[in-house]
Length: 224
Image 1: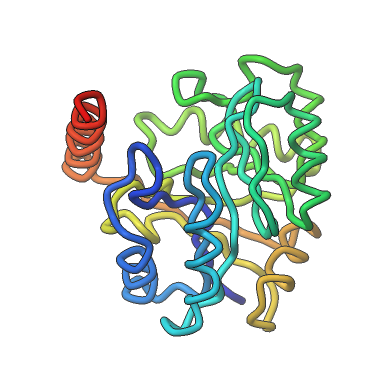
Image 2 (image 1 turned 90 degrees about the vertical axis):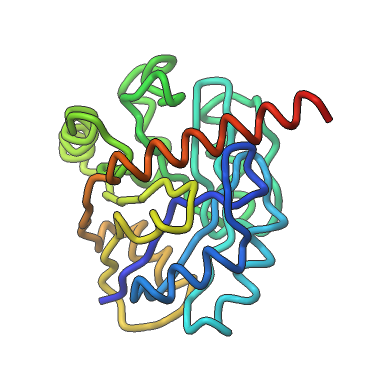
């Protein structure tokens, strides 16, 4: 059984605050086995992190969080950047063509670009898995809805901290039923539904710090 973190953001996301190296170090400190850095519409930093992960005792999974026309989609295990702005099904197909799996993050949270505000529920089955636990929650209702949706369609379940600050890494983790420490074996297990999820709510003090940092970074960019 391996514990992996599948949803994190570095400084290469508009709202991330830590370097790739700092996220890798945080994952090691959290006793994780694997890490995917999923920056918004950026791939090269995650590829670099995956290549360096072994230095930190981790399995690296290259990926990104893709802005589709319907909302956000995680592409994990891909070998290239996926174009943003395409339809949901087309984006899933592009992820598969790039050798990866498609995971739908926070599907019921429209304010965070969950896809179910734009597509019929049954269309979600084009993806390989649903993120049923996201640590950045208020009441937990959206996570429960995501879990019920995965059950209804027999889809694989994942968890992710959606970390935008290193301290959040590992708040949620996907437990993958495999003893083989490779990206390929982890992805295969997720495809097959050999997963369970663990998670804790991100503490409000960290959420507020992350939000403040994100606002500061975006303000600076407007004046650059």
